[in-house]
Image 1 (tube, rainbow, N blue to C red):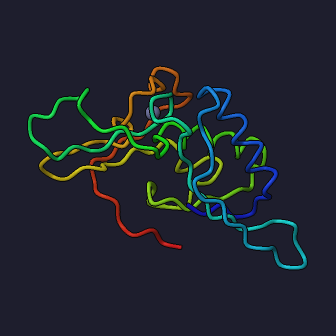
Image 2 (tube, rainbow, N blue to C red):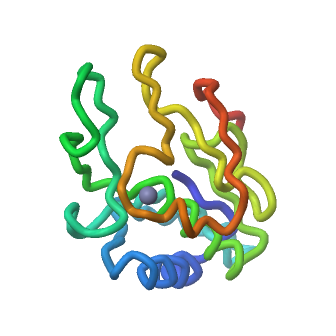
Length: 159
Ligand SMILES: [Zn+2]
């Protein structure tokens, strides 16, 4: 994921806000800062979010392609779930409304009023699994906005 037009401090503030919701279980997996051009203080930051403990809130579950494997047998991942990302983006936009995010989870750049909470299929045509279903964080009940669901597979993002 790449965040444009943000500072490292803004990213850290957004992470802190997300951690209030997920028991301090969210941290950076990757955080690479590209220094800004001389005329601006805004950097481009490549980042991914993961969980500290995959038994605690915010972890994603692996998409099972094995027929008959039930929900509770699905593998816990160290990557952060779809809801963590949605809440992170929301926090970031509150801190910096002009932030922009490029994510493989979204077809377009995610901006303050467009693209966040768009669900996508992470599974296959035989075993479809929406990104929002690949976790057990309990966040669906607390989603702040209506989730856009699409069963279409992701295409390459236009940059
Ligand atoms: Zn979740």
